[in-house]
Amino acid sequence: MSDILVDTRGMEPPEPFEHAMEALAALPPQGRIVLLIDRMPYPLLRLLDRDGFRHEAQVRDDNAVEIRIFRP
Image 1 (cartoon, rainbow, N blue to C red):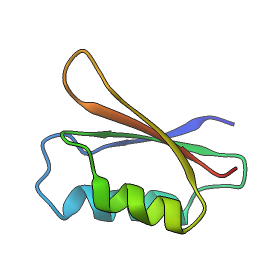
Image 2 (cartoon, helix red, strand yellow):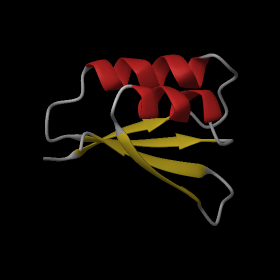
Image 3 (cartoon, rainbow, N blue to C red):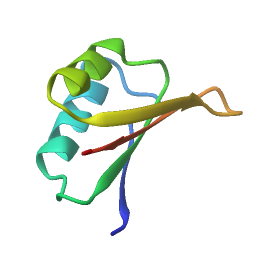
């Protein structure tokens, strides 16, 4: 299964959140989303925790935040 890339770098809020939510709605059971964003999206991370998704975040060398989202 390939990753769904959601690149929201350069977008203004709430666009990154909206794009992430659209990708979550389309996420297949064994799929994974790779979200690229300009800043740590704490509201999205709280929502993912609440809804039972797993996520791993790291700041890349280009200062973008890369978040991998998947189901447990």
